[in-house]
Length: 595
Image (cartoon, rainbow, N blue to C red; front, side, top):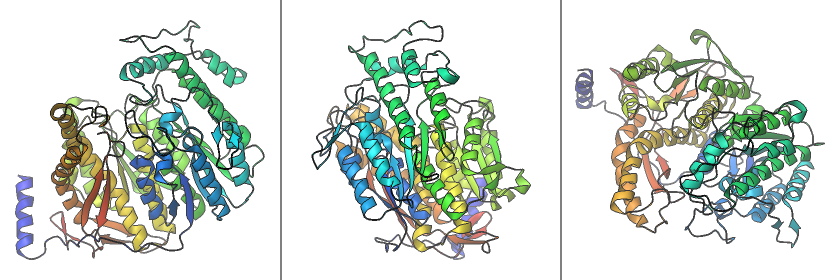
């Protein structure tokens, strides 16, 4: 009944000439000038580590410089190699690129050590032994030598501010890379999840941790159970890769000794974990013991660059923190949000609050609202949880800047997204996240939302920063609402059933990638239409008191082009977002926004 009533109201609005205003998306945009530069070496070339980081940096008035894309590309098995003749990034090129930025006068850096030292996140899980790097001048450096020289060069300029991104290796390597298959993944992930001896105090050393890798909590060897026999040396290589990663992290902190206070910050992400006292437990405890003032170790890996960009801006703008109200809907915030988390959702949120300087407050005394949909404690009450959250988002509390997190991990299907699209103003959110694993979702939403809130108070808004901000919102919403829960399922079925292919790698076997892309384009055109219509009738917050008088602007047209599958697999997509000119604020007619 409510939908029919709103539809009638919509028809009346159209007939009386006050329909939604839509400006035509522009083919080109003028490039901003004289922005402070950040030299950025990404974890790899997936969208969360590449274009989405560019959007965030642009929205804060930075120019993000990246190396040549081939230098940080990861190729899965059977796919064309990079120009360096491997599946991984070019460590020599990347090292020399960073030195070139320093020579050119750059003084802000965000550098992935997995990329610089291992050729990317995936390859860091597969490197069982040190591989020296040969530079263009003929020198060959070991990995520690490369790290030490990099830090020494950047430390020489006291004006440099450097974020070094590192990771705790996940519980198993990557399927479909370096010959590593699903049987190996399942067996070694289970092997890694088994509890290990619990080391504390002086026992926590790299040598002791590595020596205990093969042992269970009772001191007996952990058995490896696999459906099929593992390749010879698979377990040994897995443990060697873990030890190499841990030693490089240890080397990092030793290499930073003697550098100026505040010049280097280390941000470590915990990748694919488990509630159990897994093989990561002692590694995490040891790395925590090495953290210095300003360093952090947090859940999530693909959000590391978001967190670094946001924190860099917060430090530079004089951020003094904010009071936030957190409301959970679903009733399971006291447990991990998915199988890849090692802490309850509330704990992960609290650690990120500390990182960003957020303090929990009552709704009436907060500056920011954070609304979180968790997995349902009661399956029969899914609709109630959703309705309560949507009611909060579309009620009086909507006047407060809001961050929205979908931590339901797919358990609500499309129901939540459909109700949000029908009854809320999606484009008014400061940030939204729901696409990837829940630890990553938390960091993604908070990075973008807190950064935007700070920028509204401290930044200089321009057309370029505002358009970049809208892209951060549109990208996150459209990929989650439209691709993850609608179009991706169709792509999976099409690849497996129609093309008899592998949805995790379109080259193994080699299938009709043009047909898959066409299927993606047609699917997204249909699925995205109602969400784009919502964004185009949305307003966004463009100024906040007390710095400025409260103000809103209307979204213009939104068009999606340039679809791609970055790693030629169905898991994620890339796309370009074209935007029209902003409009005057849309006016609300019975809850529907018009000019």
